Amino acid sequence: MLWGLAILFLVLGGLGLVTSYTLRKLDVDVRQPSPARVRNRIMMQRHRTVAALVVSAMAAGAASSSSPAHASDPSVEPPSAATPPSPEIPQGQPLDEETDRANRTVARPDAKLVPLPLPPSAPQPRLPAYQLEWQYDVPLIVLTGIVGIGRSIRSYGAPAYCAASGCDPSGVNLLDRPYAGRYQPQWNLPGDLIIYGVAGASLATLLLDEGVKNGLIDAVVVAEATVISSVAAGIVSPIAGRPRPLVYGTTAPASVRENGTSGLSFFSGHTATVFGAVVSTFVTVHRLHRDDFWPYYVLIGGVAIASFEGYTRMASGSHFPTDVIAGAAAGTVIGILIPAMHASPHGVALQPVVVSGGAGLAVAGRY
Image (cartoon, rainbow, N blue to C red; front, side, top):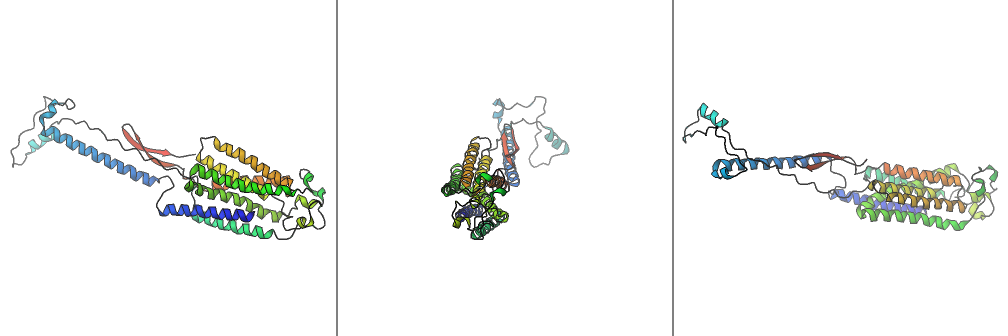
């Protein structure tokens, strides 16, 4: 089971990282425009507007001074009667000081300048929930894969310390004691199928909601949370060395009670894996749809399935209730922590805003 998760994790991680790298090479920005880029865009728009206003003013001034038709134009006011006309200056003679001063004070008809509206900003493309950074995600994927391989090797190690002589159930706490000695192997298959079903449902949810490109990017983060939850159980369980419930009785055959996994009860890796997948998927879709309620349906349904996964582990005799509770807590924490470590392209950004009579900048973002 762990080998299958590791392969799925590596495939999703590779696809997501290749997609992110390719988009950057093709100069396809999957993030919000930077403040510097927004400022440059605003300055260019302002320069175009100022140039248009200057051209309009020059054209209006030239039309008013060269054509007498402006007198019949109701939009242009005629010059005041008290204003003296511009003195005639013979061609080829320099202007004296008084004539130059008079020309400067001559009132000219005011042309109505209408500011040109700025074009509306282009709609932003839909963004994924996370940004992948190869300097963080690649080492995390490699390290997680190495630890997962080590956990698989440990499965062929020494059995539980009391497997040969028989474990005493009197040392088990009151909550776990009713499950000591239980062994129902028919519950193992449903538990394994739930893991693969939840992983497939999580990937399908992201792809259907975001599309292939963004869905693969976000699936890498969900896969990281899922596999790290499983690997965390693989690290803790050999250290704890707690015998499984099936070791406390004689119902299970000796080959099962004395194999290398009989002492890996605390905590439940299956439960942690499913809870990690469910919670990280919910965090992802909730980050994309903060104003919608349907992500909570994903959470409610996922928690119900993950809880049933924990029941299958107790019913099969593989884990005690406290093992399942600890696994659910670990998967939940990791399902929140791993997405929180990845920056969101939906952060605060400056965006140009066009309103009636002007333009400006607005601070836009998600909190």
